[in-house]
Length: 228
Ligand code: 5GP
Image (tube, rainbow, N blue to C red):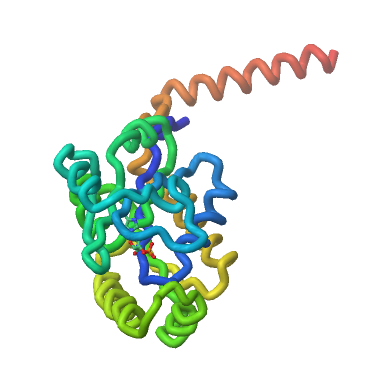
């Protein structure tokens, strides 16, 4: 009766540091075959446990600036300590037109750039249950070497949370599994939007009534024959 648009959805997931975005996205990708998350480029230093080409493509600031000049990024921003983060433009259009749902895990500045380019983008904000919990997670992760870095993370987190009203959905990550379920529910609902209908095949009323009456007529006729 309906033909849906083949084009995939573009989804942005933002949220303060240690809100659990990475883990939630990893779990989500395991569950959803048709969903991908392109790898960003960054000029920040690689951390212990990170892998080049998996977590990010780690490049120098100069290489990043060359890529900006080449217009290689869909969006980019200086997120913290003047370090660049950017989403590659290449492949995105192809992925969307092949029906893939594309998740971008980017900061609020990048989100507003992408929203301008693709107004249909679905914006999801992930939050930790409380600032106390956020503090606990930052300390536990221990990626920051000194107190200034921890404070800087908090400042950025506060700034990002101020932008939450620009988003369409908020997901509080108190338990990974529940947060993943909520995001899945959002993605499923978004696929049911009426504006995703490409064509609607509905016969006109007269045609339909005629068919209905003919079916009934033949059914009755068959019945009579078998009755005999
Ligand atoms: P980190 O990896 O240093 O913990 O945090 C990186 C921050 O940069 C996160 O807020 C993340 O959402 C953001 N980020 C990661 N990749 C991109 C990107 O490609 N573009 C933008 N604008 N932000 C990004």
